[in-house]
Length: 354
Image (cartoon, rainbow, N blue to C red; front, side, top):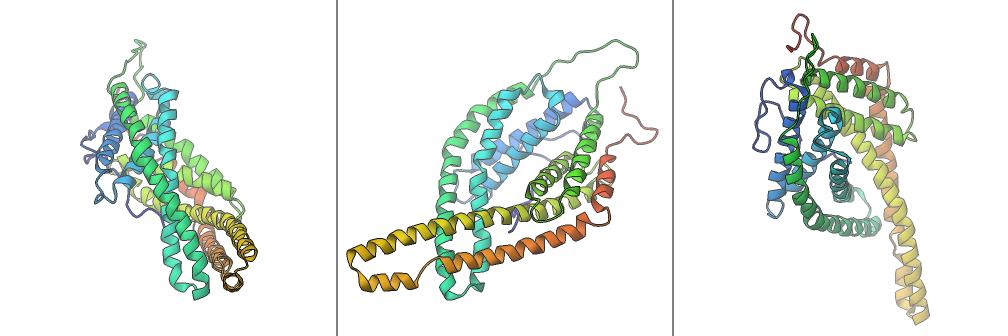
């Protein structure tokens, strides 16, 4: 399986969908910083949404999905600092929009893998390959139609509300000595520590290919850590290298997850193809079509689908071997998690000013 071809990075000091993030974002209050990040991502999603109707904008849907996903992750990470702006109902609506874009992406990735293995198939195996490809193409096209209709309509209704809510907030000042609002750096440090520990724990429970759920959990934590760090990659020592490693881990775990999903899809396809073939043979026999019946009996999708199953099994083994070597052996994951957890800690002698 192959990951999405377009990177989804957003440095803190460069424009994001028409908005510029301030260079001192880490020193600002978390309530302000989280909103500025979210507004930048919302603007990026709106920019991608505007490009969706143009058939020549082939990356628009990918960019839209990425912006929505990153926006959700930001709202989730800094939820305590956004509570008076983005409530549960708005987050649920955004989650539903993001989920609606997943089937199209999954089908697209699966079709890409199928195209790559087709030359290696024998002629009699390509019938099953073509049958599965047509099935996935129909699913992808239906999913994309839904995005262009329902999802865009839902986003058009949601975006103005989110922008209005995120563009202002109230501050409660405590006049106690030494009090000051939580800074963006402090909020980030807490999130990095928690998600780094969760990543190490999830990877620690991945021992075989059967541990699909834990591998998927680790992929989600790697993605959340990367999304937390990327806006500050230029501001935190070691962040760029950590982002690079997190992206590599996320891609590896993503390919493994995609292979799991396609293997399950091929299993369902084998059952459906067998049932459809049995019905066709039954109808030919009833119609007395002896010649067509003999021809149909010699053809079928089963050989091609089983060939795909074997290749997927080999691919999964290869991916898991890489994961075991690079992340599951010699304490690699806990060491990396410990490094990431401290990237946003206050520099010695340079605390965030009140």
